[in-house]
Image (cartoon, rainbow, N blue to C red; front, side):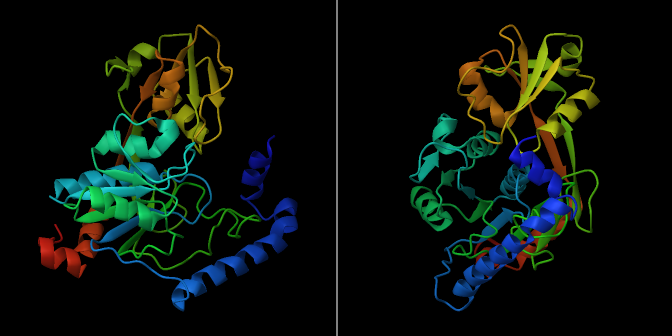
Length: 336
């Protein structure tokens, strides 16, 4: 088992490895406390933008389903009539400088998740390690924007936020310890505005969401291939370069699709190097992986994910945003 796999297993319980790493988690806690203190005391500047900011993040290391939440959030807000932009770090990209993301951008330059958000929503998006710089770049290019959603950035305290949404999957908080003895980036519980569970078995109170694969996969040129047809094929190989690849494989099987092989790859995998699948295989992948995989395997099929937060979540979000003076007074945003 890889080192990452060993850590993931250790983070489920307070076993021997977790206890061995416990002193390092105390050091991590101290550094995190100093980081927060610097902003609380004004030693470092908190930048407030001229438009409201909604941060979608998590306190658990690894993916918890933030990107589908961001997509659903942007679609909801745009349906309410708001001009919405998105900022992201752009994990896994080969570039360092900040830039705007376009539908035709190379995912290796802008990141797979930002490109997926742009293609799914059509919203303007900028990537930068510095979320403030990303937001400033975005507003300079799109001055009509009325609200910015930050994809991740819960711990990026330089960017002031009006609403915080904390996302959890079925792992919950694991063993409840801070990194590296546990999965937590910061102690939980912590104050936040909304908690959304993306898994099927929430570990504690919060809003929930339904997740399901689409009825059809899509080709590189946009054609649909029903999953019912794929269920009859014996040459399928499923590949996933996401934080929890087993989730994708399980959802395929639940829809009757039985790949001959399932290949789990590291999150944000770039699909460089020799392919780990047979040359004659028909590949199935996630939407996140598709843009990069299609460059190597143009016949691969991407299976979209339908992600639907419960209506009460959006009602609570609207109520929070209706209390933001810069939004309610300027644009008349009201709770639905």
